[in-house]
Amino acid sequence: MFSILLAIIYVSFISLGLPDSLLGSAWPLMQTELGAPLSAAGWISMTISCFTIISSLVSDRATRRFGTGLVTAASVLLTAAALLGFSVSSSVWMLLLFAVPYGLGAGGVDAALNNYVALHYSSRHMSWLHCFWGVGASVSPYIMSYAISAKNSWESGYRTVSIIQFVLTAALFVSLPLWKKSNGEGESTKSGGVRNALKLPGVKAVLISFFCYCALETTAGLWASSYIAKSYGVSEEKAASFASLFYLGITVGRFFNGFIADRFGDKTMIRVGCTVASLGIMCILLPFGLHFTVIGLIITGLGCAPIYPSVIHSTPEHFGAENSQAIIGVQMASAYLGSLLMPPVFGLLAQKLGMGLYPAYLLFFALLMLAMTETANARTKKK
Image (tube, rainbow, N blue to C red; front, side, top):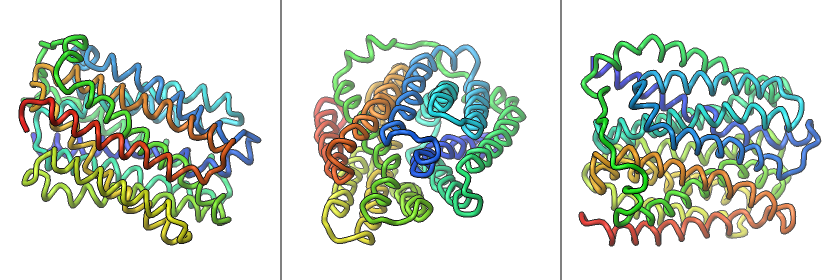
């Protein structure tokens, strides 16, 4: 029973990743067809992140009342409906409207599942589960690339992923009895609360670090296709394929990290990840052409791979299981605040200063993330 539930959780993490890279892959064509400004992708992403923050902050209460299984299934259903809405949108305003359930669905499942896995599974499983998120994030740009190249239709790309999400939703609702019967469904009803969590040593530094991580990952994924297309003059479908390699790097990295995560520990994995990501961004920054930029995107993805799962998994150990749900909820909010603000800020800066700012912008967040990670390590009791 417990193994079947673990398989269901793996499937759920695929559903988390599927929608995340669609907008960046499709935006060069969407921008042209909708007659939208370059920065509009940032505002759509900002709306999604805003409502993700809201749902992640209330996820503690929702999960304790309805259980992880039902919250996960309902959240994926919301996301599927939102993606279907994207596929029939004919204006930026319609996209902004459907971005609301998109964000609400993403935040609920993210916070609930991450806390559940942090409490009940090893660092190895956390890495592999987030690898499955990367499977979804890596596959969806190829779906979009095929839709654009074969049908010249970004709408069909969104429609295809929406159908996949609806199938996953059905599987999750069928699996609800497994969640109720598992030993892990009865999460602790005790919580220190958000205010008390923020007072713990090291929490604020972790929040800043998580903010930087999502700012880096979301900006890198959202604008990679546009950066490649405008900097090197390649077609929209080729740019989308190249951009997907960033997520492929994350996916492959998390798969191999699963074999070593328990041995080296969360803190070491985070340090190494920040360093490798910075080196990858420097490859993009150097003026050595398209192929070096693509290699840099892959290396950046490999560096990002261990950071998110390791930070989440270390939360109960560093701050106590009784505080983990509240802290992870706030961590999700802080992370998505980075997703909310930083991609549209880059879009505005790119309109003024050009897309060449892309690698320097990413490097700033990578270095700040490393600094905040070390600050948090110094302030937590367990070194």
